[in-house]
Image 1: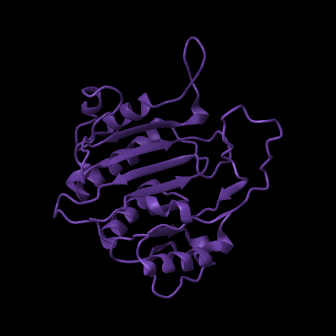
Image 2 (image 1 turned 90 degrees about the vertical axis):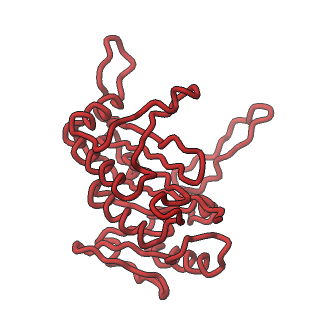
Length: 266
């Protein structure tokens, strides 16, 4: 059994849209996930309390009315009375599949935000099960390419990847020019966590999506498979078997990919 856990991530910057505009995409996304594998076919609300976390989140196939209701519940509000919607902050929702074994999966969505220029403010993430229920096998790169391509078509992100959690410590960083060192003394027992470095994006995943304008500036290293979309965007795959940081070849390809995309990272 692999030690690795994987997550699909998609990000995009400020994009003003209403709940009603986003609901069709959200509906298409959840219904499409359900056809990919049964691990994505039964969602629970989560929350607190053992009974509460298993409450049904929605019925599938999701209807446009239910998709709208779920996103509407996730609006942000000003801290005022009466409550007033804070539209710039967007809206979000999340659920999990009620499993705590190799078939655990979950998702979260934040969309419609346009409060600032943060290129990663809007995002979709999916925790991917260790094994697929359809064949009780680990996910292959081929299956995840199909999943990632589908998610990209639905959400139109700027960045996207299938990520290995244990690879997080190896991602590229650079000094943050906006970092201001703390000058006042720390409270007793406190630890200063900020180092002055920032993560570089787009980052490298097991699978890495680059939009057309970035892909045109990158030469993908030998041994890394590339699938190209009609618009010029690409998905680069480090290996067909499950990626692991314990495999020297996988890590060598990841290092080569990091170097290849460094000119387009920020």
